[in-house]
Length: 174
Image (cartoon, rainbow, N blue to C red; front, side, top):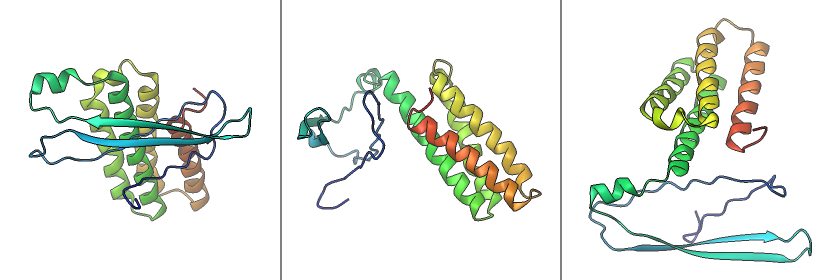
């Protein structure tokens, strides 16, 4: 983040592609006024080659009423939060395996189990979350066996899981 600006580069975006983006932040409970922020999408129009910009003002309004807060949840957004969180945990688990830290990797995979269990109401209705849950479960069992595998076998497992994780995160092959 530079100058109160977050820059995200969508490297492999094609026509009709859908990209998900989750920005997570915390606001102090004492904060009670609306918080405006702007988002700007800059892209090149493929038909004209001209640069285009879409600017959007967003306003985040803190709500103290619990019922109103809970009523504002969007199912699709909640599913994507679960997906992005689980995907991030998988990345961390794979990183730990790369470092030979199988216990830390197991904890990240286990955390995903809790996430999917806690959010089962979303997992049941989402093929995407069910697929991620399945990949996580298989990876957790892979971790248990990796200590005894040859380095080349571990690299193959890691590569396969990274591809699956990437495909789910980037909505490929759905």
